[in-house]
Length: 183
Image (cartoon, rainbow, N blue to C red; front, side, top):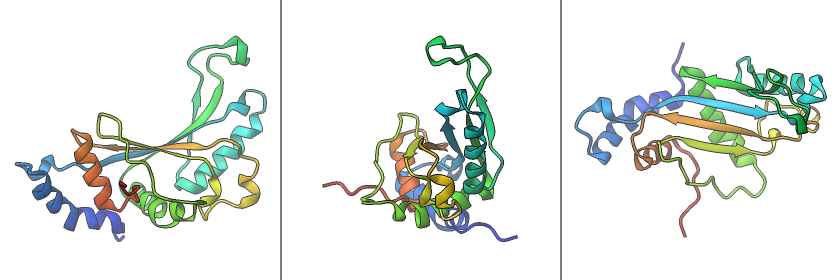
């Protein structure tokens, strides 16, 4: 089986380029992607259990992997929420599936968004990047009829081994993330 395109790019070109660009003493210090987590909170799951099943099917198509249900950690009476109730789903992608998902995201899905100008350049202070997506129809695997009932968006978190935001930004920029241009 052939390695994904982005993984080969990272191993063959980007890793040595980042090693020189960041001035690191050891090649093992070069930042890399550890995992990608897709997270969806389903507020309708409290009253309608079928809402969660629809989200599970769509997330399975988008990620290529079966999602795990997330459960409420504590009860909130105002929202009619009890501890242990399923309220969302998440998927953790690693290895080849992670690189294939990122490749589809940056080359197919993001450019099809309406009025797409690029993604924000703000990273958290630990070298990770969060991306919120409001519409499911940007992914070609999702049917429009399925996605029209899904009112909530989802969050994608890219976990890296970078020690600083500058290292993580250089890694993501090298992988081809379409960040907004500074004016």
